Length: 545
Length: 63
Ligand SMILES: Cc1cc2nc3c(=O)[nH]c(=O)nc-3n(C[C@H](O)[C@H](O)[C@H](O)COP(=O)(O)OP(=O)(O)OC[C@H]3O[C@@H](n4cnc5c(N)ncnc54)[C@H](O)[C@@H]3O)c2cc1C
Image 1 (cartoon, chains in turn yellow, green):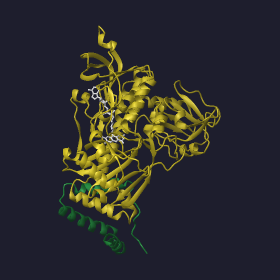
Image 2 (cartoon, protein in one colour):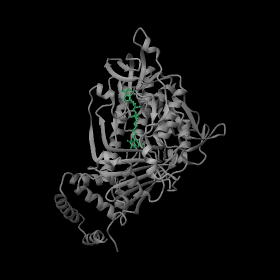
Image 3 (cartoon, chains in turn purple, brown):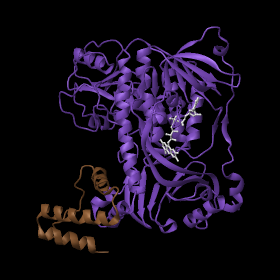
Image 4 (cartoon, protein in one colour):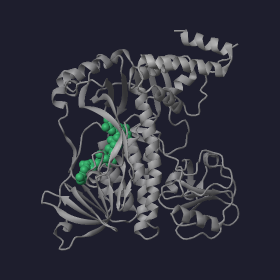
C-alpha cells in the first residue's frame, strides 16, 4: 500500500508475465506416413478460436486447434463481456464461472467537463440469467475457455503450432504448420481462421482487409489501486484532469482499473509510454490515490473487414474477419457470436445433415453483424475523436446543449455497447401472425426465469440450448414433429414463474416458437402445425422449403 | 408557452449525428460555418414558425 506510483511502475510496466503457460507436445500427425486429413482445423486459440473449438467439440465434431504461442500472456485487451456472449459461454460451460470471477455492471455515466450529462442503464429488465455486462480481463476468459477445452476429448489443442502455408483444394485445404520440431503438413476439410487482426491465413490467401484507421492515439493503462469508485462505466469529454481529450475508467477484478486516455493524433508513442509521464497523467486524474501500473500500451484503432468471410473451405471468424475500435466492446463479443453462428452450421454440414450452402448463411448473417458493429464503432469513434476542427465544433455543440435538451443527450456517443444482431436472414420463416413482446424473429430469444418439471429453478435460455427446439404453449395434443427437434412445453417443461416469459414471447395458448441451435428465433406461429414446423426447420437448415 | 420540441425526435439519433458530421467532413471551420448558416436558413424556413425560431435562438445563446 505504501508503494507510490513511481516506485511501483519501473518494474511493473510491461514485464510480460505468462498468466498461464502451456507446453508444446509432438502430435502423432507429425510422424504419420501419409498426410492426415482432419474434419476441422481451427487456427488461433484466442477467445474466438477457443469458443469455436468448444462449440464444435460439444457437438461431437473432432477439432484440431493450433496456436503459435504456448501461453496466455498479460496485456490490456478486452475487458467487457456482453450478456449475449455470457449466454453463449453458459452453453459452452463457462458462463457461471466468468460471472463469478468478473465484476457485474450495467450503468454508464458520461461527463462533459466535470459535470454528469448522461447516464444509461443497459439492462432495465429483471429475470435474465446473465447480467448486461461483466468486466473481466481477457486472459481470464481465455484461461476459462482453455480449461474447458481440456475437458473435451474431441479437441486436440496444439501449442507452438504456427500456420505458415495454405494450399486450397475443392473439398479441403492442405496446411503447413511450423513447430519447434520443424514443419509438418496437415489437411483439413474445413479451416476456421481465428488468427486475429494480423491473420496469417488472410495474408496467405492474399485477401485485403480494408476500412478506416483513426488518427487519434489512445493510452490504455491497467492500474492496480484500492479505490471505492462505483462499478460503472465512466466516460469524460474534456475533463479538467485531461483537458481537450476524452477519458474512460472501468473497474476489473483484482482491484485493477482500466483507464483510457485520448492523446490526439500527434502524440509521441515512445514518450507517452514512459512510466513517469503516464504516472503524471494518472495523478492528475486520481489525485492522491496510491496506484501501481500493471500494463501500458498505446493504440490507434481500426474499423475494417474482409469483403467475404467464406473462401472455399476457409472460414474467417473474429478479428481475422473484422476489426473495430473498442468503444462499445464489440470486438471479441462479436467474434464469439461468429463462432456460435458457425459452429452449429459447420457441425450440421460435417454430419451430412445440411449442404455446404448453409455456411454461406454464416457469411450473410455475420457480415450483417460486422457491418452493424463497424457502423456503431465508427460513429462512436467519430464522436470521441472528431477528424477536424469543423467536426469537433459540431461535437462540442452537442455537448454544450446536452444539459439543456434531451435530444442532444441522446446524441452523445461514448460507445454504444454490444448487443446481439437481429438477423435479417433467409433462414427465418416470416411471421404469418403479429407478435408483441420483446422477442424478435432472427434474434436470440429473450431470457426469463422458469421452473423445471423437477421443481428446480432455471432460466429459459438454459433449457433451450444447443439444438433445434420447439417451445410451445399447450393447447391440446402436440402433433408429431420431424426427427431432430426437441420440444419444450411452456407450463410443463418450463413453468413461467413470473409471467415474464409469456409477456416477452407474447405466448398465447397454442403458440409455438422454433429456435435454432444458437437460440435465435427461426419461426413462430399462433398454432402449431407439423408441416409448417418441418418446413421452417428445413429452411433454417438451408434446405429448400 | 414553449413550442420548441427538445425531446429526441429521431428514431436513430446516431444516424442523424453522423449525417451532420459527414456533411462537414473535410471542410474548414469557415466552410463548415457557411454550411451551418445555410442549414439554419433551410431548416428555419421548413419549420416556418417565428416563435419556434425565437425560442431556439434563445436556447442556443443562453450559456
Ligand atoms: C484496448 C483494447 C480493448 C478491448 N476491449 C474489448 C472489450 O471490452 N470487449 C470486446 O469484446 N473486445 C475488446 N477488444 C477486442 C478484443 O481484444 C479482440 O476482438 C479479440 O482478442 C479478438 O479475438 P480473436 O480470437 O479473434 O483474436 P486474438 O485474440 O487476436 O487471437 C488470435 C490467436 O491466433 C494466434 N495466431 C496468430 N497467428 C497465428 C498463426 N500463424 N498460427 C497459429 N496461431 C496464430 C495468436 O497467437 C492468438 O492466440 C479490445 C481490444 C483492445 C486492443
